[in-house]
Image 1 (cartoon, one colour):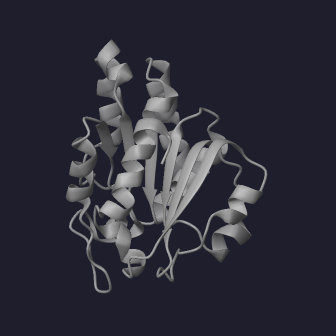
Image 2 (cartoon, helix red, strand yellow):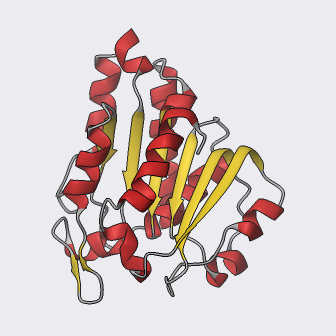
Length: 213
């Protein structure tokens, strides 16, 4: 396994376990799962079509709400289901030390949203999810997700990679307590998730805070 290029997720969860307190348990915890381009290029990834993936700015926007933020640069071609099981176990560990499920949110972007969808399908804790641009015909044809928790999906009408509504998943059997969706029209295509745009960041923050829009 190559050396991780950003914060080491397992280590951070371990440190939280060692320093568990009433304050940590009450804080908001955000796991950010990035897009595939960062697997391929690393933290400073730049797309010819969409520009720089502003990972640091996205994470800073989450930290600004006084949340504990976790992020890991995945290895190239990380298997979504296998990686999801790993993160799911870490979520279980957070809950085991007293963090309330409603204070945990997984924000997945693009491939990260696919990973988050796997987690929501097999982790039964009522945690929160934000799926950013993670659905298309291929996902519907090749997965049988049954989501748990509180789900917010956000997609952009101009996105020709993963700009499909999650209505297909809302209509299927699932175990969600809340399932909301927002359609954006930024004109940025799949690149809308490359920056902490107000259009998706503000509803995401509301979801993290209260699971309401």
